[in-house]
Each structure stands twice: as C-alpha cells, then as structure tokens.
Amino acid sequence: MLGVASELDAVDATLVRELQLNGRASVQALADTVGLSRTATRARVQQLLATGVVRVVGIVHAAVAGIPALAHVSVAVEGPTGELVRDVAARPAATYVSRVAGQYAVIVELRARDDAALTAELDWLRARPEVRRVEVFRCASTVRDAYAMVRHFEPVALDAVDWRLLQELQRDGRASYALLAGRVGLSQAATRARVVRLVSSGTVHISGLVDSDALGVREGVGLGLRARGNARDAALAIARLPGLNYVVTGFGRFDVVCGADAPVRARLIDIVEAARALPDVREVEAWYHLELVKESYAVDLEAAAAAAARNGG
Image 1 (tube, one colour):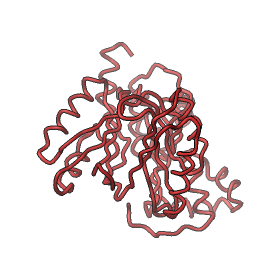
Image 2: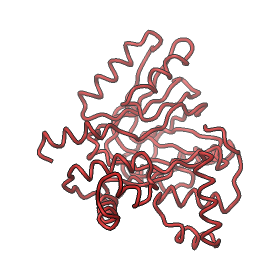
Image 3: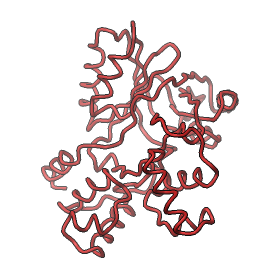
Image 4: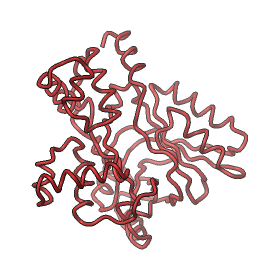
C-alpha cells in the first residue's frame, strides 16, 4: 500500500474506477461521468495522481511484450518470509508477490517468454533454503481481469517509433500528446494516430493501477477452484460474482484461480460461500492476503523490440 488517505468520496472513487477502465479518458469525458466542471474534475484527477491513489500506466499485451507464459505459484516457507519476498519481488519475472495466511506463506505470479523460462524461475525459487515446497498453477486463459486486460487483440507491425511510444506510455499512461510527440519526433496529430492504433489493436491498455486501501478495499482473498466438469464453465460462473477482480483457467494444482476483494471481511465470506455454492464448482481452497508486496506490469520493452526484430516482427 502507498500510505495515502484511507477514504475517498463518491466522486473520487468514480474517477479512480473510470481511470482503471480507460487511463487516457479525457477530462471532459470524466467530467461528464461525475457531473462536475472540467476545472474541478482536472483538479481532482491531478490530486489522485499526485497522492498515489492511482498510477496510470500502459500495460503492454503479453504477446507483444514477449511474456505470454503465466504461472500462479504457491510457496510454502520454513521460517520468516521477509528476505524471500524481497528477493522474489526484485526478479523481473515476478509481477505479483503477496504474503498470505494459510498453508502457503507467499503467492507469486510469474510471467515469462515460454515454459523453459518459467521453469528456470521455478528452479531458482525451489533452490532457496527457506522454501519447503512450491505448487504451480499454469494459467491457460484469462476470463476476467480488474485492469480490463481481457480485450480484443489484433497483432500489428511495430516500428521503432511505436516501441518508443510503448515505453513512454508504460512509464506514464496519461502523458500528453504534445509531450509524447516531442519525445518521438512526430507531430501531435501523427502521435495521436499512433497511440490510438496501439490502443485500439489491444497492443497496449492504458489503465489506472489502484491503491486498494484508498478505495476502502482492505480485505482480499485468493481462491483455487476444482471444477466438476468443464473448467471454463466454472470460471465463467464465478466471474459473474461481484467482488471478483480476476479469474483465470489453467492446469496443475487447480482448474481455476481467482481473486476477490471487499471493504470488510464479512463480504469476503459471502463471496467464498457463493463460489462454493456454484454447481460447476466441486471444491474451493482459499488464502487470505496479508500484504501486497509487489504489483507491477512494466516489462523490458527494449528486449521485446529486439526479439521481435530477430523474429521479423
């Protein structure tokens, strides 16, 4: 958590959620949504960004970034977890690291270019002296995602200017067209056309990464489901429940993995019970998030560009 104020009013909460869906939404569009003037809306957005309640970034599609292989990893630990989570969080392949309560002490999301690279990360993790056991869920498809990364994707040819724009958007998703144009050496109109193309093709999604504590979301759980039959049917059913922030299907320890958050623990209990009541779900295993150590979707785009050039992309 970023240590910002723990409460937002209804207008700010709406602005945050709108930025989460579309980080480059215009001030006028945001003003129309919340019913304030452009000046008042701009001031509120600037305050949200300045205090760290929301960070607007470009999230590059995994296929473009060259990291389509995704694994959800549960880690059983002997002894304290502090040094382990610090070292895991420092690894570029670890995009999400959380300390949890339950039979496993740490949850890690790993993204890599292929299964061989994932295996290397898992080998490194298993070799740690404090790690007793590692359980892996290899993700196959995403059904729901809080940052709207489940979207249309149409591969497009990228040149050096496109890659530079992706780097700039990854750093600051709300950078103005004038600023972007100055950095890539194009006119504002040409820069805008390029950004629109990158966004509309699904190459990059501009989203607000939210400090959940500032939204009043202070409780979180992860859920591992074992399905009665078709895993995707179970995933689609649970994705319709309120409070779910992501749902993925795959194979390994579970058939479906998902996450939920809520303002109070009692609401989490309702969500877990609702998941257990679904006819497509045979079994539910839950873990409680104690501390979110890392959440980052930034990737090495220079390496991705070089790899694409080698592959003729």
